[in-house]
Length: 255
Ligand SMILES: C[S@@+](CC[C@H](N)C(=O)[O-])C[C@H]1O[C@@H](n2cnc3c(N)ncnc32)[C@H](O)[C@@H]1O
Image 1 (cartoon, helix red, strand yellow):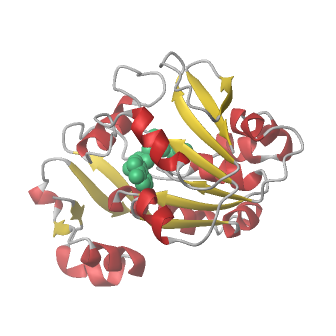
Image 2: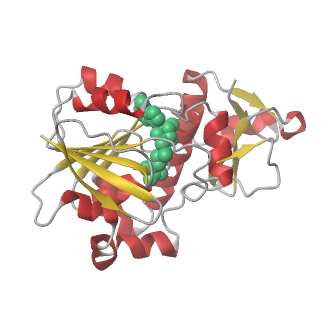
């Protein structure tokens, strides 16, 4: 069960943004007041921000999306973005125009791809994660320097494999960033890991090779698969090369 906390409950219609109310209804998210703090992960709207918290770690700062933080804005400058590992994954003088971020999570990588000049469609399977991303994007649109980037990015709530099998749209680049195992503590904060685990979207039970094969069955010029640095390389026929960081690795598969 997914929860949304609102105080006082009878003011939800006047305080919460419309997209939130619509998705709450669509996904049968249960609305409760903070007196009834539930188990698991819940949504909360305060200070004009939608955030996610977990009942197990109540003292943690809630998780929300804020693309206007100086460290993110620095990464998105022309100079900053060129030094991103994701930029290196596209190669020098690339001519790709479109990308599907198949596992967009909190959207930072999608925004990086967009600031590299790609038109990005980003899919997120969890309605709760989708909602905090959507809220963060709406707030970021008020920032002039982010407006253009965000206009090149669309987000969609659902399974990207379903999306790919029903759309006629082809993407030059498919980007895949599954959850890493919880032993890989460097790559994700413990708090976010806790949230993703609670939402049952850690993809840990899935065999990465099987997942990769599924995405490779769709046409694209390049598939980028983010992996823990030391994980075994999945060397299927279209494997080209890897770009390595300190804790992660991007494996590149080409058409
Ligand atoms: C590691 S996070 C991605 C982080 C992201 N790259 C970023 O920059 O914030 C993985 C996300 O993929 C989502 N996910 C997993 N399987 C998915 C699928 N089949 N379709 C869409 N989203 C999926 C999970 O819900 C999770 O939010």
